Length: 312
Image 1 (tube, rainbow, N blue to C red):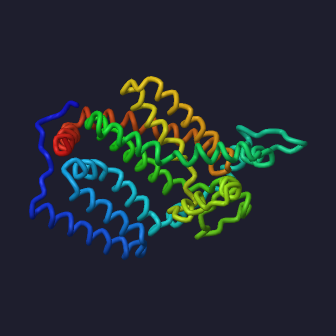
Image 2 (cartoon, helix red, strand yellow):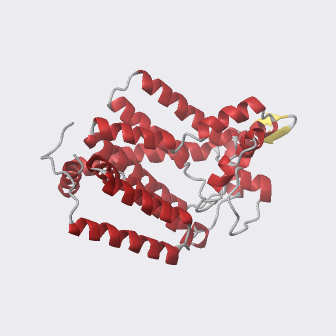
Image 3 (cartoon, rainbow, N blue to C red):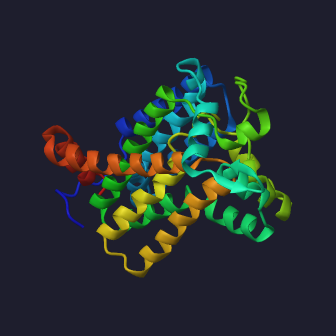
């Protein structure tokens, strides 16, 4: 591992007070902004437990605070739905997708989502569910691997992940977009406060008689956030750092997962091909923006150096 002088986080009265006040402030603010939820308590318990258990767990959770910041921002987006800021794109996006990628099927021009829905199979439903459930565990597992291998690369990955999400959130608010399943369920009429929907992933839940994806999509911040597909962006970030760290055969697995997630996003009617392409583009822009900012802007380079030294 490279980096500056080893500065191990030390438990002191000041750090105990700081963590306690931050935990209380987070719970109070969250209750005020989005209402009290058990998830918030779980997050506080996990953070405090890892902070106090051991030196390495403390460094780990401090490093992973980048992902916690992402989660908090994502959660707080519920307070100001993007459809209250900009008009939601429904029919125009659907028609543009059909214009670019439409498939003639039995005398009708269908979007790829519509074509795949009428030609769905149980085998594809199962494979799709397995791929799509990887969209968060794979980046987090990869981050954990980097944490124990190279703290500098870990922080670079985590901050790139956060930056890509922030770019995606900006687009969510400037270009609210309905997912394909919304049109399948509600047509082209805008209905605010529409709850999350599992789309084609409901077939995976039904086949195994579980509620895996139902429980996930019930917690979504906004259903009108299909463009860009951040599900499609995350594996691009993983692949970039996988190649950068020369992981060899592991990269083949990661590429397979990446392509599987892209295809599943369309197969399950959660995203158009346009959304997937936008997600890939957002990831590429975010990666290059991070590389520029944290190598060319002295204050950010210094921040990265200090953060790395703090968790080594």
